[in-house]
Image (tube, rainbow, N blue to C red):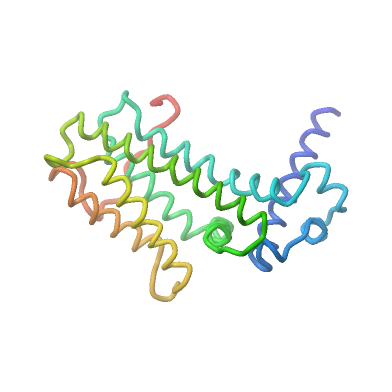
Length: 222
C-alpha cells in the first residue's frame, strides 16, 4: 500500500509538471497561476500545493526534470577512462539535437526557458539558466582539456575559448530555431554548426564531419 501511495504521489507530481509546462508555454510564466496548473492537470490547487510551495518551485522542478539527464550525459564525456572526448561530446550533443527535434515537450521546454517576462519566477529561471550555462561551460572545457591531453586539439587552442564558442553558437541555433522554425532546423543546423567549430579546433582525423553519433559513454565509464 505504501509503495502504491508513493507511486501515486510521483504520478501526481509528474502530471503537475506536465500541466505546468503546457500552461507556461501557452500563457507565459507570468500569466500562469498554480490554480491554472492544477485545473489543467485535473487536480485541486491543494494537491499542487502539497507538492510545490509556489510557482518558482514548479518551474525549477520542471527545468531540472529535463536538464539533469542532459547534464549527466555531458558529464560522462569528460571521463578519464575514455580516450575519445571529442567523439563523446559531439555524440552527446547530436543526440540532444535529435531529441529536441523529435520531442515536442523538450522543444516547448526550451522555448519557455528562452522567453523572458518580468515575473519573479522568470527572474528565478534566469538564475537557473545562468547556473546551467556555467555548468555546461565547465563540462565543455573539461572535455576539450581531456582532448588536449590526448593530442586531439590543434596547437595553441585555448580550451575555455572553444567552450565559449560552442556554447554561444549552439544557443544561437536554438534561438533561431525558435524564432524562425521554417528557416532553421535544430537537428540539421545544430550538427552543422558543431562540426564547423570542431573542424576549426580539432586535429584532422579525430572525427568525421557529418557522421552519425557514436555510442555514448555510460555510467560505467564515469
